[in-house]
Amino acid sequence: MKTLLLFTGWCLLLVLAWPVALLALLLFPLIWLLSLPFRLVGITLDAVFALLKAVLFLPARLLGHRP
Image (cartoon, rainbow, N blue to C red; front, side, top):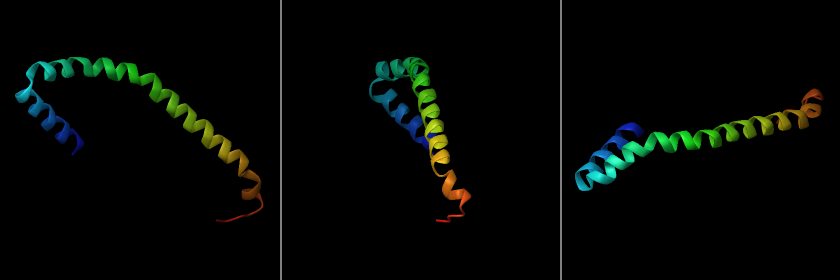
């Protein structure tokens, strides 16, 4: 559904302002490549916080605490 809405929006932009639509089409892969390192940093930080949570809650889990 998200892809359909994105495609419909791009077609509307193509009809209303075709140079902007073509520029967006050409710049999309570049923007995606530039955002890739930030995604990797986000995934890494999420994993680090999950590990920290698991280590901090380990004593409670070993003692049998159930939420």
